[in-house]
Image 1 (cartoon, helix red, strand yellow):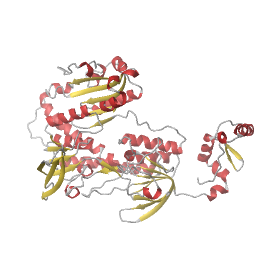
Image 2: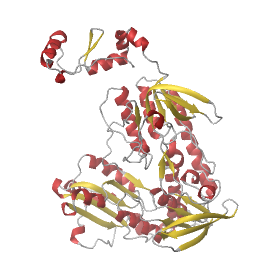
Image 3: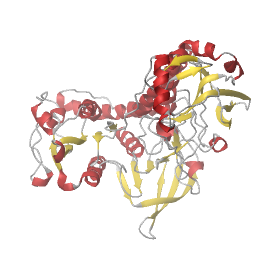
Image 4: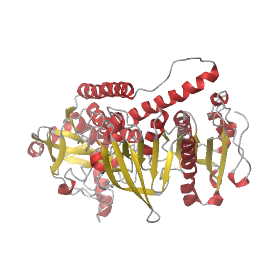
Amino acid sequence: MGIDYYALELDLTDDGSNIQQVLADITGQRTVPNVFVNGTHVGGYDTTFQAYQSGSLQNVLGNQADGAEVYDYDLIVVGGGSGGLACSKEAAALGKKVLVLDYVVPTPSGTSWGLGGTCVNVGCIPKKLMHQAALLGQALQDSRKFGWEYDEQVKHNWETMVEAVQNYIGSLNWGYRVSLREKTVTYINAYAEFIDPHKIKATNRKGQETFHTAQTFVLATGERPRYLGIPGDKEYCITSDDLFSLPYCPGKTLIVGASYVALECAGFLAGIGLDVTIMVRSILLRGFDQEMAERSGAYMESHGVKFIRKFVPIQIERLEEGMPGRLKVVAQSTEGTEIVEGEYNTILIAIGRDACTRNIGLDKIGVKINEKNGKIPVNDEEQTNVPHIYAIGDILDGKLELTPVAIQAGKLLARRLFGGSFIKCDYVNVPTTVFTPLEYGCCGLPEERAIEEYGKDNLEVYHTLFWPLEWTVPSRDNNTCFAKIICNKHDGDRVIGFHVLGPNAGEITQGFGAAMKCGLTKELLDETIGIHPTCAEVFTTMEITKSSGKEITQTGC
């Protein structure tokens, strides 16, 4: 509120106990803080905050409040993705005046999108829908074994799929704008840049500038795909930012990278019948359990996806224009001087993402970032080193890059800032799923991390292969689905890592994620009666440990 105040810390004052007794006699309050304004006793923290919310505190402050700086907004949120929107709407529901600034810088290919951020427009939503398109193709193949007969040639139409996906995304974009309006949140489609600690410049598509001030700011700018930094990458390659609205079928595709984005895109492109190759610099799914990652990769390879291991592109050339056209990639071994070349219609780069923090004026107001990755260090309340500026979502240093995490953090932050709440976002045991052709769901620690933290001898790892009943009639892929739990032997066999590779892995993992929040143990799993016949029931009957060395292959469902 910009009000000068004096704090008397009783524990640092020689006569503190006597002063506290006098205050108690006067006010009847023995707790701290004990707030007085112009000689009038207001109360402790809760009553002071309630007085602020009701406006009575401002009345008590009188002329002091009149002289305080007045801001345009209580809160400005920079970024209109999942986290930013959640935070803004929650703050508005608590009676605050809120502005959201969101602007999508077009990709080198010219792609841009509407309100909602990465997940809605170029991430989770279109990815899952295109994954579903690939699963339907597999279901068509399986259907013949279940008695379905059809003579017509079945083929996939890329343009039809993209149009349907984009129409749905468009409806979400509109829904977000309507929701902000209903919540009385002001939305401006403009690029935000700090010029003072409490002042932002907003530049729209036409270059017109407006200026806005706020008492508090939340940064929720998200990330954008990283390019290779080699000749031809931005000129001729695309990223996931371009793929989901691509107006033509990408044809023979090279995907550079081994991130979950790379594997998911490769999976659904291969699933709709395209020739797909993945070029991998080192390992698959860095940060995930490597046994699960390699099993996922092996499944993709057995279903037609080709892998070029331990090579990186050094040059991209265009051989022929068109939609998609023809490109040549030159790549070099990471272990020597060997060079390989290949021709593709489309090259998609998925080597990681960079935080959108370096060009929004944070250096002008003193907000610290990690210079290596551009991410923002925060405390356990998402507060930066500048007290009135907070950050949420993928730009946080050392935190999970997941949409539901950003949404939860945004809501809880608004409640702490404006609703008197003390609840913080819990970043531990967050479930997630990689939507590769054989889905990979996990919660808790990868086996490698568990060994680092607890020591191999202190862990018991239970694992098994399984065969989904739905796959038995088509006679496909026995002993490829895999389940594993990692237990801490010295904490009652508490489950500290949950991993499943199989159909509907996301649906399975969500429920077990809740159980892990409640302290799930191996004994509790054993006492749980499974639902038969399902894939999830395998976790209620696991008996074989890795340490036993026993065979885990299955002969039936």
